[in-house]
Image (tube, rainbow, N blue to C red; front, side, top):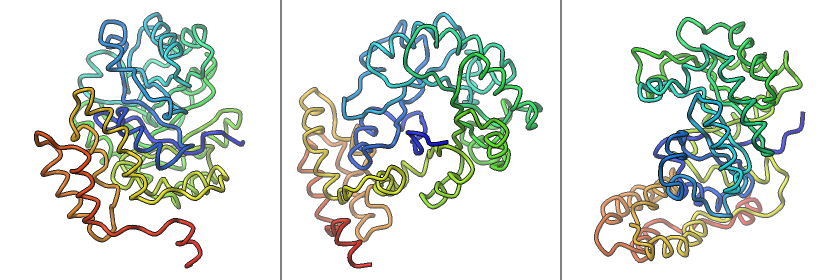
Length: 333
């Protein structure tokens, strides 16, 4: 099955805010981006501008929702559509205590009918796509048959795309960080899901670190969602548009990406924001390159200071050599 978004960056709390998404969009124009998870309560009763604001450059962009009440989720999906989001995604994968106390996230895998009702309500409320992100399983409900029942139940409500974190989640005893690493990866079960449900769009997530690994998974599934590796080595996404979307335009260099952030940073500073709100997302831009440590240190030590601005980032860029344009690199190979 051909799918228009074969590569995406996973929703990550304290990571995929609007500043990081804008930064990543300068590196890849086609990668599907996700917000951090936003609860229904935050949207319905909180400051929407804070939670929902995004730049037009960020498209395609999906809003990930956290909640379990079909009426509230439908209201939030409608608000997301009004704000211009391309998709809404329901979080059925987060195992944190806070999320469990709200009766949403990974614990919803135990009640697939609840998820189905939520999906049905959201789909009736909006025209944009409604998708689900979930785990292989939770606690003792972790065999393939249970996952298949979950997917079939939710698919019957109209969901056609599932992003599957290829690990189970322990709802007690492991922290969210431990749940990202300790439960073993079970990729073949996600591949099997695609094989047995070819009519569905299946996206795999969990432990995928490189674009070569992503390409291998795309032999078995429709799409790949990359999480922490996008934050730890963001520039590897510079090859996504050409490799997975067939684009011909050469990607910008690392220095070009950084300089392209200047107007955005200036706008943020003019609104009373701090450089550190944005520069923290840019620390790994030069990961693996000569001078990367000096660049990171300068930003880490200075971006939070009073008066930090474009000049702070400009100085950091002098600490790393200019990288050759991608076309020149290709010609040299």
